[in-house]
Length: 451
Image (cartoon, rainbow, N blue to C red; front, side, top):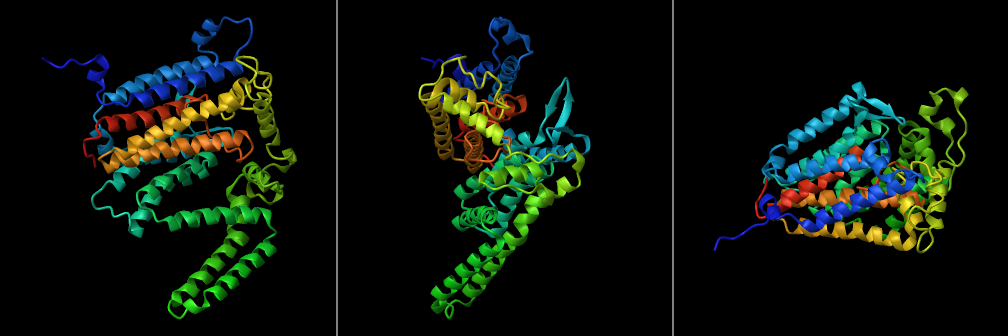
């Protein structure tokens, strides 16, 4: 008796429908949150949803476009993603370089390319997809030995090239997202020592912001002397050990005395430095900032505690929801327009106010379930290419979720990255849709070894 297949099985055999359902749930929640923020009483809801004039109606249109893109991806051949991985990455880098020539500046960031009809393309968003594919392509090559420093440096360069360009575009938030690829590389054999070094660097930067420079230099010197004293007997067997300690000491002092101040005063914009300093309870002196000193000082006004207003209003909105929330369309803070950027970067506040702590936890559990499911998908791949790509998707999502939520409750500087599948915006929604559905397409062919 011939085997019968349903329509979905015929079109997309092997697709992980759990991820598809979670994706649809999150996109629906996003449209609902944008609706809660913008809804006006005594209006025809259906008419506003199909008008294309409100942000929630536009997001619905974006979702429709993404559905078409998702179906198209599911119907493609998995081999196309390995074949064009390097080419797409090169195209993404060229697009990012093009923003310096034809780019449009939005909110102080020249990272957008106008494509007509009032729409703008942000290459740094799309380049996350291309970077994930290129890194997967490189790590899956038979000749790549990721235990060697050369291979690790090449992998790091693939991940960080778009990040460097993002910094020059004044898109610090998007640049930081590319750090998530180091989680993937750690899974593929990156030595733990490099991660420890990275965390140590982060601690040193924070210490530099908090502690007076001379005192911190004395503390670092004392740590080096104590370490040398404790390990003095091992120097006879390993002469390089003393050299390593001295080099690390000199490097640490150099970073805290010169590198960190240079980055904050010359690389970051004044508002970016101020935001980071505010996280550790410090005020940043914008008169030291190179960008500020070259600006029109006559129009400059010293900022109140940087972005305190944004975070304070966000905390008030989330806190006012209490345990159970105020209820659907009953929020006073988010619907009262008190929270800036509440339909984009601060969309989590509308959910927190309306549905409270319980609703927020359930929402975050949906994200957690999605991440765990993606990890399961990654670990069942026969192909290194598919595994690396799936871990890239999980890492990017994890970074966005943690940073965005922490940003809204004041645990992280405001760096302007969206909440995946929830925040308003066509570029963001399309990017995450493509990321997830390419993974699903590769997973559907998980018995195939791709290179």
